[in-house]
Amino acid sequence: MKICVIGSGYVGLVAGTCFAESGNNVICVDVDQEKIEGLKRGVIPIYEPGLKELVLRNCEEGRLSFTTDLEAAVKESLVNFIAVGTPPGADGSADLQYVLNVARSIGQHMESFKIIVDKSTVPVGTADKVRVAVAEELAKRGVDIEFDVVSNPEFLKEGAAIDDFMKPDRVVIGTDNVRTAEIMKELYSAFMRKSNRLITMDIRSAEMTKYAANAMLATKITFMNQIANLCELMGADVMAVREGIGSDSRIGYDFLFPGVGYGGSCFPKDVKALAKTAEECDYDFILLKAVEEANARQKRVLPDKIAARLGNGGPKPLAGKVIATWGLSFKPRTDDMREAPSVTIIDALLELGAEVRAHDPEAIKEAKKVFGERIGYSHNQYDILKGADALVIITEWNEYRNPDFDRIKSLLINPLIFDGRNLYQPHRMKLEDFEYLPIGRNGKG
Ligand code: NAD
Image 1 (cartoon, helix red, strand yellow):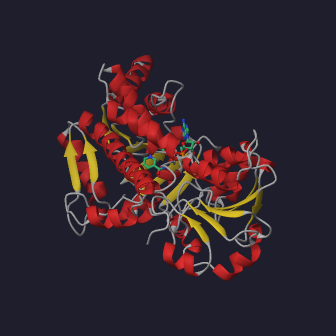
Image 2 (image 1 turned 120 degrees about the horizontal axis):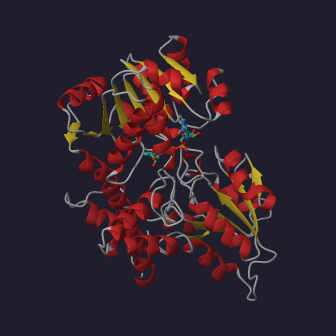
């Protein structure tokens, strides 16, 4: 099948590459000339495990190509995926300008029947707006060409994106057209070999499914964070509580790890956008408002703990203190810094007067765009510990799970670790003579 994917970011590049890998002819389009020139030379603009090999192979075999020429890509393709960003607007609602720009461009250039697929995360009703935008452009040209708009939200997780795309838990297709549903089924059939995980539904329900999924996951994380905070106050161990509740099959173990608050390019903006959608319908979605508020507070847990333990009063209680942080990306196995909790945490530490030095296996380049020279960086996780007053763990990269504790102790001024991801066992840390402050399990384990 001939496909074009418009927007070659985390989602578009992965989707386009995986469709090429399953035998389709795919053109990935982007407005970012530098990104496209790089991709043509085999330079992958993001860190995503396994992506580079797949891109190179499919380019070499002639199934995958990159261009800034949207017109040519649209003319050649039957299925046109829109995978551009939908960042939050000033009022929290999803900013649809990029999606609708693409829709208009498709309307300006299409010459034959097209299936236009909303792959971006977009609020309920967007497919209608896309349809209107395309129809208006066709009307301006004075032509009448058939097209169909489909909602096909993406559920991949950064860091495991290829696997998620190739072996999806489900693929949601929102359409009211039987012929289009069949074409979409055919396109995804390569990823359904084990069992059929394709769910077709009406367009509005498909659009809502994506927001409901992300809002549910954000709620689960937030619930566990609040249980952890309470555990800490009550002398209970949140990790034991997780095991206790996770064993109930109605609850399950997934997504019940307490931490420093959720971040990333999806949960914060999608929770905000769904809350805004509710507001526009005069529906008071009080749970979502609480989730947002609780998550903002959770990002303050680490800096407040650090200030309480190491601070010496005054407006800059951490002045003269050096804090070493492990992990900058919003989660492991990605270089994505969008809405990363590290940003709030490190900004707060700087505000409190601390000097901050950071390590991350992949995100330092992206982090420099956020923090610039305000913090120090090292590609060696131990270098930043020399002479630091404490180590703070923000992201749970595998590299941090079994570190050389003797080396850490010999480098830090104090054997003090604030662990925002509960990577270590408190009893082991006691044996190692560390003062260890995890989330929701002080002195336990
Ligand atoms: P991204 O910012 O990484 O990529 C978007 C790309 O679109 C950029 O390269 C940008 O240059 C390009 N673009 C913008 N306007 C364009 C235009 N008119 N023509 C061609 N290209 C254009 O974004 P992303 O993380 O890939 O997210 C894309 C969408 O997918 C969002 O709606 C997001 O919510 C959703 N989503 C993201 C993830 C994720 O993990 N990142 C997961 C599921 C869904």
